[in-house]
Image 1 (cartoon, one colour):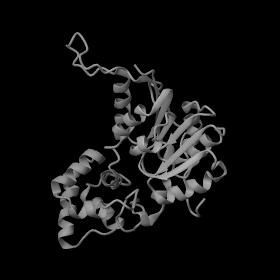
Image 2 (cartoon, rainbow, N blue to C red):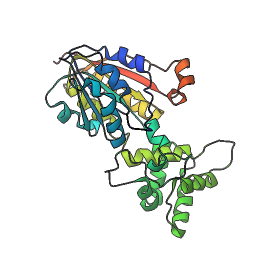
Image 3 (spheres, rainbow, N blue to C red):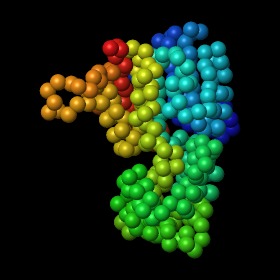
Image 4 (cartoon, rainbow, N blue to C red):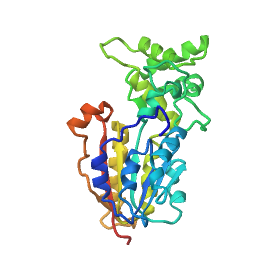
Length: 310
């Protein structure tokens, strides 16, 4: 594994149990990270099984390639976005799909990636460095109204207007270039109320905007269901309420099928249930895991099982 790459897979045992892995099955890990989840999937496969591991971060690809090298006969690794699952599966039916959403520990801990408000570095926050828009672009080119939308919708920031005003005023003097400059600006804008890190919500919001994190969840789940075999399972790990709400609602719609208004006595949309929500309530990390890995505290795991095609 590349030197310095650190990523502890969250709820590893729970994920493996939820996927109910078949030795000869086809599995898709759309957020391979350091290869922790992928490794445990791959080692349960025989020569007839296959793991497709995907990540858009070049550091993650290097780490996963190293970690999975002993299973080269049953794995393929792609630098891509999990939304491209149909092309990556290339006609194969997946028996399991895993999406571990959000930012990785490695991305947060690597200062030069510009994700963390705890370390001063150039503003970036791109999970895929090939993407054209960085956090610096968002902070320095978005209008005040656009900044308010981002902070309010993606960060649930109650002081979105005040923070946006401070950003716009500051960049009229000079461009905001670093995470340290942005963090200090947010601290000035947010009224003191004893909160240790008021900048956390702003950094989350801008990161989500840069990487389109929330916009891709529903279509990715829908695409995954299109590509799954009967009885196949999709497991999704989320780390904040915005992600979890989308996953919960998307799974609920897939289980219901019909989208007709409730006052229509007979279904006219023709949509059928696509399967069953396995987790009526999300699976949470154990107390022991939260102690060993504090970043797991906010994690939630939801699982859906694909039904028979009509």
